[in-house]
Image 1 (cartoon, rainbow, N blue to C red):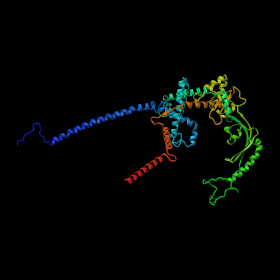
Image 2 (image 1 turned 30 degrees about the vertical axis):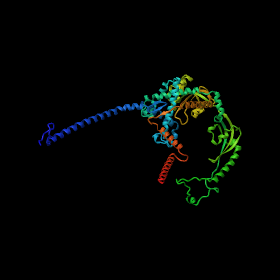
Image 3 (image 1 turned 90 degrees about the vertical axis):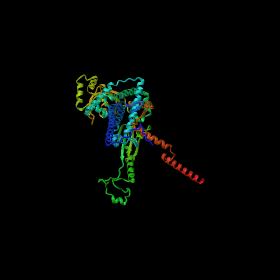
Image 4 (image 1 turned 180 degrees about the vertical axis):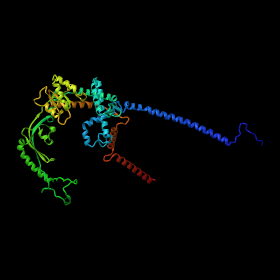
Length: 545
């Protein structure tokens, strides 16, 4: 058979060592080329990512400052605004109750989110909630004010506010912006918080306007007094206190001492100090009986030997005496003996009088300064025109408006309880006349007051009831206005809402569980029942088969 060749088929060439070497070099070059391309691409991506990250710093800062942190009444609230409201809530709370926090073991200088307010909420959660409630109220009032077209120029008030911030920053050796950050959070600056301060001033102006609208009439005040006389009347009474003479060592009425107690009795409580003797019930009863006999005899002489207490309001009277003293049936000369078992004593009381204290509030002008310059200021005034108008000028010259001083130093309708006792005694002196002046440094105070007496104003009880009725009306108004207020937290920034949601979920599960068992126990019981039914079904099927 004749062999033929395929013209299209190229015979394979034998690969020499040189050929293999060349091929390997080509392959290595190709791999290197591909590797360089890949590295270039990765490098470009990395550089782009770094550029994006660097560029995102101002973007992220902008979003923090201007972006939505939460929503209140449908309005976006930035992190800066929320921090401002949060710190305002903290500062206001500490100014009122800071002393009690220390007593409760709470450290205001530590992280509030690590200190528990309740079983489920931290103090940080509580202040978040306060901040939200304040924002709902303020934004609701602001919206209502704008709806009514209410106008209130905040420029002057804001100027006083900034002056106080600048002074505080200077005293603490800080810049204004650093001080503002300390007050309102790390993103706060004077310009950033300005709108929120101005809104607060605007709302405060509107609130004052509403309060004026809700001022009660004199008829309303009299009606309220008639329904709450005991809260405003005062009483005069005589009282003698008879303390029971409790034994300081065992008597024949002492409790029997067990043998082990006798062996261990060393008269000390383990601290090295002598332990006070604790009387038995029988000894206390005998001592109280003896004190009662003395008290019954003291009834006849309480007016001569007792202490006269005058102008006592119910809220400040000894608790055990309140009901008796302010009984409508009480009349002059009534006497009683009242036991105080907790303190082992008796009160011997004679009623003298009940009345409505008609003490008048006062109007005056005032400069607050220090002891060294107070008298010099008054002498400066006396050396001039020495009129009320010139005293007002003196007040404007030396008072600091940033500290809340009114124009001309005017203080109207000042009550006894609103000023130091030394000032109250001077203003309430029966000989006081318009134009009287004084320089008074209250005991224990760093302040000295230069005073100009103008005259009297309304009775203090009228002012008190008027303010009570205004507060009641305003509370009802604000409660109704904010009833539909709400907060939206799509980003989950408010932990107190999570805690509340978890509590509501747990309560709902508990309410849906069978009576007498928890939801988890109910589920477990159901699972066991289903397993039992399944097992029983299998057994029946096997029997049938």
